[in-house]
Length: 630
Image 1 (cartoon, rainbow, N blue to C red):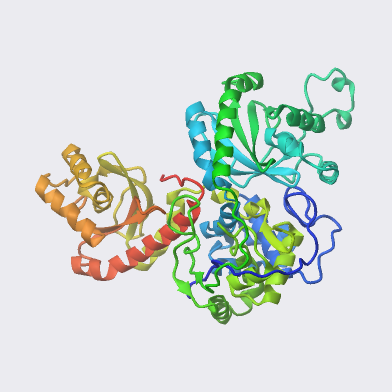
Image 2: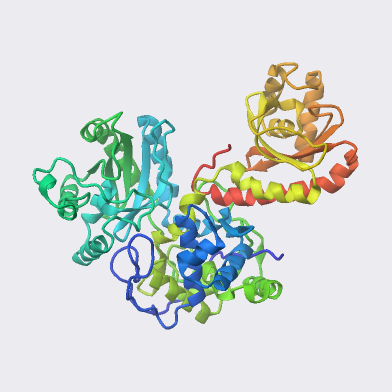
C-alpha cells in the first residue's frame, strides 16, 4: 500500500473567503456542543457532502469513546449502511480508523488533525511546561482551556493520580456556564455570543450535547423558594452564569463550586496576550481536600505567579507575522513526517519529501485498489486540515492548495465545508483552524497507552509469523511485560502481562539496558538478583558489557535459552519522539522452528517494521501529551 503523504510548508497568496465567518472563536454555522450544523442552517452549495458525512462519522466515534459497530454508526448518523461502509473504508485507508470485524475503532494517526490545531495554536508548546510545574508544586490537577464558541475545550491536562482524580481529556468540550474558565471567557463575549449561548441553553436544557459532563438535571440546592416550585421552574446549574461572568471579569479570576458534579471544585485565571484572553489556567481539586473558598485562598497567589510567568513566555515569543512571500518548496512529508521527531510541539522538520503530485498518486492508487469504496473527496478534505501547523496558523486558499497539492478549486470547496461546520474560520482572506478540530477523536485517543498503541501492530506480526510477540518496559533491574499476543498452538511461550524478569536474562531487557549509559547499565546488571529467572545466566561483568555493546551496535538482541532451554527470542527497541528507548518488542519461539540465522534474516526485518509502525503512532499520540508506558 502506498504511503499517504501529508502537507508541509505552504506558499503565499490571497483569496476572498467564500463567506464571512460568524462572530466568536468557532466560526461558521454550527450547533453548540457536538459540532453539528445548526438546525435549519443552509449548507453551502459548494460544500463537499462526503466530507460532511465523514466528519459526522468521526464525531459519532468520538462520542462513543473511540469505537462503535458499523450498524451503530448507521443508526447514529442516519446514513445508509453502504455510505458508512465506504466512509470507514476510506478512513481505514488513511490510517484514521481500524476495522475490527464489524466494529470501527479510532486509530492514533487520527490525532494528527488535532495536532495540527495545537501546533498552529503554539500555546501548548510554550505553556504546557509551566502547567506541569504548577501541578507538581501544588499537587493538584492543572488544565489549560481555550474557548470554543459557547463552550470550553481543554488543550492540556496535568492530572494527579489519586483515588478521586480528574478524568477529563485533551479535547473534551464542556458548557461554559458549568466551568470556572467559561465565566472568564464569557466576560469578553459580545451580545451576539450571549444570544448564541442563550439559544443553545434553551435548545439543550440538560447539556446532552456535551457528553464529557453529567446531564444538567439537578437543581441548585439551598434556594429559598426552589422546593415549592415545579421541577421545570427550579433554578439549575448555570442560571446565574451572566452574573458570574461579570464578577469574573471584575475580579480577574473565577471559581467552580461543584458546577460539573458534586465534589469537584476549581479556581481559574486567564492568560492574556495583546490584552485579550488567550487561554485559561484551571486548578482542580476535590471537596475532600479543599472547599471552593479554601482552594481559592490557598492557591490563588501561586496561580497568579504562574500566570504571570506564562504571559512572559508568550511575550518572549510572540505569534509570528505573516510573511509576504513564504518559501515555495512544493514538498510534503510522508505519514508521520509532518509530526516531526522533536520534543512536544516541536517543529515539523522530518519526513521524506515527495513530489507535489504525491497526494494525487496516493489517492489514485487507493481508488484503484478500493474502487468505489474509497471516497477521494473525503480524503482530500481531511488532508486540508493537516496543511496547518506550527508557523502555519493562518493560510490563504492558495497556500492550502500548494501545501496539499490539491487543485485550488478542490481546496476551496473543502475549506467552505470546514468553515460551514466550524472547523475553520476566515478573516481577511486567511483561514485558521478552530478548537473544534480537537473533537475529531482527540479525547478518547489522548487516553491511549503504549500497550494499546502497540497491540494492533503486534497482532498483525504474530499472525504473519505465527509466533508470540511481547512488549516490555524497564523497571529497575527487571523488565515488566506490558503487552502480549500469543499463538494458538500445542507448544507456545506462556508469559502473562505484568510478569517481571531480570532484564539481562531476556532479549527485551538487553535492548532496554543497551539504551542506558554504559555505567548505569552495568550497575543494573550487577544488581540483578541471581535465580530470579529459570535459566538466568551467570553474570560476568565483562561478558555483559560486551553483550550490551553488541546490542547497541546491531540494534537488536538475540537470546538463546531465554526463560528455559529451547526458547529463542529476538527483540528491537521502541523509541519516543526524542529518540529515547521507552519499550522493547520481541518475537519468541521454540528453537526448533527457526535457526538463529533465520531469526536475523527473516524475523528481524518484520520485527523492525512492526517497531517502526508502533513508533509512528507513538510519535503522533505523544506530540502534545505523555503516553503512559503501561
